[in-house]
Image (cartoon, rainbow, N blue to C red; front, side):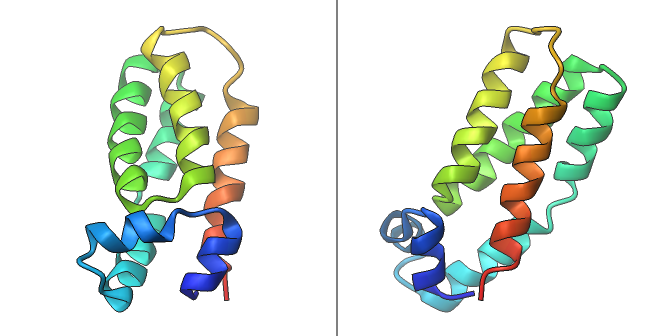
Length: 111
């Protein structure tokens, strides 16, 4: 993973680097940690169980992590899920969750 590949993904790398005091290695390490956050899987389980309260708490925590990393496409999807859950909307979350996981996988596979 490189700064350029993150930029091509759509990340706001300048913002992310600013939050990491301009240290590229630290920023890249934080992204790797964020992508391995087990709350992605916990969210899937919460949604499968139709536990909208727990799903909201989980996605809200992820929103903070991904927002700090400035991973814009992933953040936008998380925000969409968060807002549906904030309203406790009883919708089919699978397409949004699948999109979220696909975007996370795209970040994990960046070269």
